Image (cartoon, rainbow, N blue to C red; front, side, top):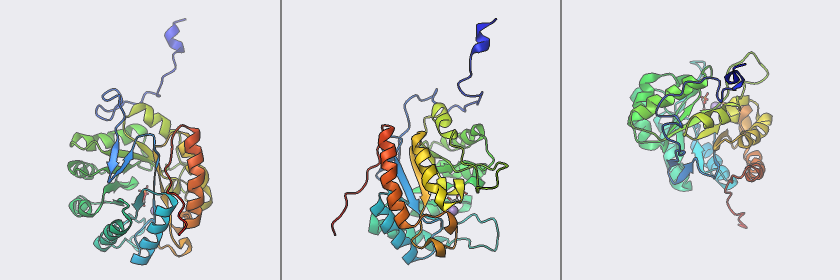
Length: 293
Ligand code: PEP
Ligand code: MN
């Protein structure tokens, strides 16, 4: 028998585009967002509300997640909502709130950009631009964010293969911007009990194919608050370089995605658990020293 027939493919035949490939660049890309780095031994936790709703909501949530150990604040000012009648976000007012919360807390901010016409404006306020799941194959948008010199958080399309995901990242790198973080956020399957099916096998697979950092969103990945901690821990165990988690100071009153948002207390408890998992896989999560104040 031909002994080659026993060879097991390392990666199920995914064709890796040039620039994102580990073959092109064996050392891992370190993505810097403000003073925070993704892709090193420290695991970075991004947290905050789904949408920026008000000054009080954003300030209160940001102060709490910072205390819990989050290094970056999330919050959508432009929201991609399934229904045109749902809250669409505060727009530029939301961006201004993010910018003032950054001034107060020192947390860099990440927020979504949905439209090529808004890239310049969003880039003026944000430390990192998020391209959402619904826009992963919006090629003009990928090219436009590739022309900025801001780090890009690229979420996996909910029906995208890993090859398509890497090709989307390649569009950004092709414009000269290699500061791209890939985010697994769940895919659509036949299973209706969770909002999406969080594809954790994507993490080791992507890390074997690309030098870019890979993070996981257990909030959209499950759609269920009680499940977020388990999947967050599992994501770190399989090698994620970071997490993005929805947290709200009053989840029951959230305008958007409250059912999958952790309370600030739940987040603080989770962070201490995540640190234990990180240490078990030879990584770390730096947590603030407990204050006596
Ligand atoms: C979000 O992060 O708020 C969001 C809309 O995520 P996704 O694009 O993954 O649905
Ligand atoms: Mn959300």
